[in-house]
Amino acid sequence: MDGGPAARDADELLEETRRLAEDFPDEPPPPRCDLPEGASINELAGLAYLKGDRLLEPLEAIVQEAGGEYKRGPRKKEGRIKEKMEEYGGDFARVVDLERTTGVFDSVDDLSLAISLLIAASRRGDITIRRCKDRFGCPFENGYRDLQLNVELEGFVGELQLNLRRITEVKAKAHTVYEVERVLKNGEGRGALERAVDCPGLESEQVLRLTIDGGRSVIDDTFGSLAVFEAALDRALPRGCEVANVYSGDQGGVLVRLGVDDVGAMAQLRDDVIFGSAFEEALRRVTPRWERPATDDELREMGFEVGTSIDGRDLFISQDSKFARRARPTVPGVEAKISVDRSSFLECYARLMMRLMCPVPLIKLFCAARQNAVLRRSHFRHV
Image (cartoon, rainbow, N blue to C red):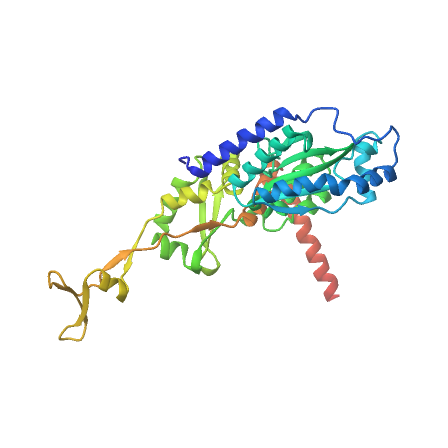
């Protein structure tokens, strides 16, 4: 696919996050609140009570100045704090996300502005950035991305996440992918894997759900035929992605199942769909522009009058040439806005990755176990 403005904006954002991560690297030792060794959870909570609001005030101002939505997260519960403390050898002071907030942005430009404002505030000494985790440049294996910063005020360290709205909207689905990959990596067994992913339907998942505005038909109203639609998909998809089947969906939408032999190509499509709109832009560039019949107002603007022939049929008469035609004049159709259902895509991607990462016989075993369980429950209901 050819790069466009969205691709260039994404490249510039990745360069900015890379530089920020270089200036504030995620290296050991991790940040620590200014508490004495052996400090208790109550001392950490007291520090958060005294400093938390003041720490987040300048971060809220930066997010809102950049045009983002500021979302303050709930304070971590005692049980979760203790769990994280165990990751740091029992040191409560290493738990640096007791106070956390998120800035959500509708565009890459707004997110880039927020990063610039944070850097400027850091240079002025208004905030102290202690660490940056660049998950835009180094995303999770499931494709989820964000920018995570630890910021300090007078010895108390909190967390700021910056993200794009389109990514936060699929965050719950991304967690499904994370759970699948974690279970497989840790070898936690069949039960854990079944809990991570609902097994039935693995062989029938559709990867892409496409719709156009107005509830019109993607194939009939926009492309005119299935063959034209599939040819456009072949040109818009990353090289290595192949269309396996196309199905009619609800309200004129289509469901597209892809071949997944090339994992790298699927990862590229994942980034194109979730991180930006590169796939949608590529598909729009190869979408045909059909002619449609002109309305009565458009006919007048084009210099046509409507008359009636001897047999009672409409005639369209050019005021300039006085030439009459039976076919109604046409005008270019409105460009269709094709959209991808990102939540459905990421959920399907999770399941496809599980199928690739997990041996087929084992998956079939899981499905058979689930089916047998259903049959047993049905049997008991009839006994």
